[in-house]
Length: 319
Image (cartoon, rainbow, N blue to C red; front, side):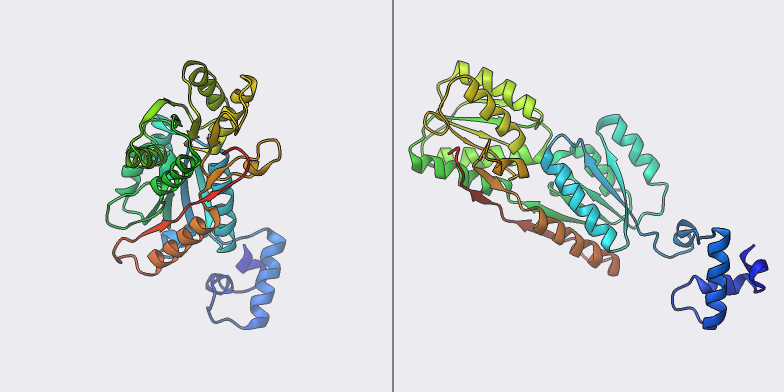
């Protein structure tokens, strides 16, 4: 239709929309004017199927329970858009995520990005076998063509534990996340390292789902049953819930109880919470993901690469 209306060949229309293809400038302008009038746009997916890049990148986000995950995904989508990459966002877990994976792999994806720290291992492993370049963020995956960006979770929580031990805290409790969340297990391990090195052990622990509501419910029960003077949570959302529970129980934070989270979400610095936490730097992690993605697309056969991001303590008012 465009060729007929512009009085040119179909190949001329194709060249008009192909970057770098030779075509007389006046003819190119005329073709684009006619195309705009007819509402024509080249099919990017068709171009990808013909051997080019589709610029589609699937992002498996897991269950977006945590404000940190929401902020992380928002930042990476912004970065992708700036590079003219178009994310396909997959939320959920279990059978739902398995079905979504099967469907999305029917498209000519340039790459997969996996928020592995809060995603079950089975989904991560299946993505890694999909023969599509993949970057795992948060869970280390040892597979050809899979690059990793991971926070040193254990180190971050160990720093928090050591800081509280120096403060004189001795009776520690921990609220973790779901059993199959890599980040939660790593953070728990870091706390245990700090305690063991100082001849201490956990007095109590509980496992939640990384939400404020879960943190509040678990902390209320834990603090009523156990005399603890330090409570560390595997993420900030749980810590904010735990802080609410401690206040409702009449505990002075940080006088009676030191409380520390992990991630440093935007809510943590609100005056109402003023939460001491471990920062899991989003900007640095996203920048490393983008660098690895570009490197992988340029050199598909390169060896897998793992980049670690260092967390650090943010001292506020609850420790």
